[in-house]
Length: 167
Image (cartoon, rainbow, N blue to C red; front, side, top):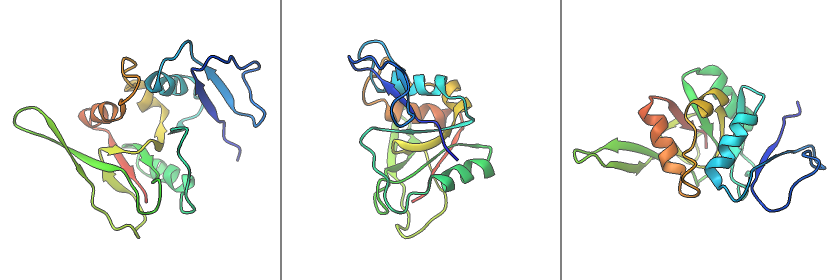
């Protein structure tokens, strides 16, 4: 099936028409708004139950299975999002733990690089399929134009949303 591709764009060029030559739909932002505003615009513009969010410099590897990520979400309604890995042995996945002084500590998730299936985490890389309703309920903080990643995932964890990754 053909999936819609939404591109949040905050550059100077205005795309007219809003649909590109490959069928991608440009969600035009006003000014240089940053990553958080772009991701929120995609979540607001999505017309499907799920959306894949990824940075413009992410490349899939031969083992990337978007259908498997989507299947994880269909199987577990408590799961907010399921992430892919940048490479079979490179998965940015961390667990967050509260400390007595109020700070949160991030520790890498240990996993077998030859494994498949969903692994639990609190923070994953920016290549994931997510429930649009969760993204709308817990938007990125648009004051953060960069380095927004951990704040977004900490808010999901604090709200009790499950996150996972599939190497």
